[in-house]
Image 1: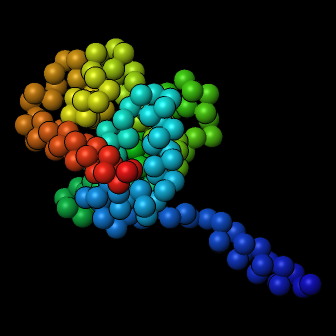
Image 2: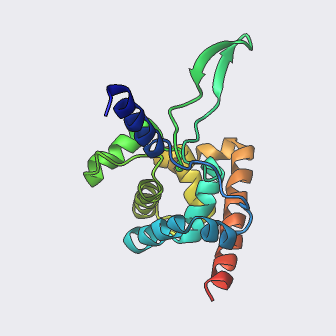
Length: 193
C-alpha cells in the first residue's frame, strides 16, 4: 500500500471520528420529540437525576435556555466600533454553557479531568453538580427551575446577594425556564406511558 493511499485512509478515518453531532434536535418545544430524536440525552439526564436529584425537566429547561441543545454553542463575539473583533462575550461553551473557571472547578471536585462541555453526559452531570450545590448552600428546591436558573446564571454569590433583582429581563427569562420545565415535565410524563 502506498504512502499516499495510507495517508488518505487515515485522513478519512480521522474525519469520520471528529466533529460529532452538535446540532439542535428538530422540535425543541416537545420533550418527547427531543428524547425520541436523541435517546442519549434522556439516558444522560436520567443518570444525572439519579446521581444529583435534579429532575430531567429542570435539566432540559436549563439546557434549552443556555444552548438550545447545541453541543458546541458559544457566546457571540464582541466588536469595537461595530467591526473590530474583541473576542467572545464570555468563556461559556457547550450544552451547559459552563464558564472555563466553573468547569475546571467541577472537573477538580469530581476528579473528571477528561470531562468535556460538548459531551451530553458530562454537561448534564455538570448541571446536576452545580444545582445540587445550589440546593445545599442556598436552600433552593431541586425542582424549582426558575430559582435554580437564577443561581446558575448569576452564580451562587450573585443569587444570595439578589443581583438578579436589578435585571428585570433575567427574572423574565428565569420565569420562562420555570414554565418550560413544567411543560417538559408534563410532556415527559405522557410520553413515558
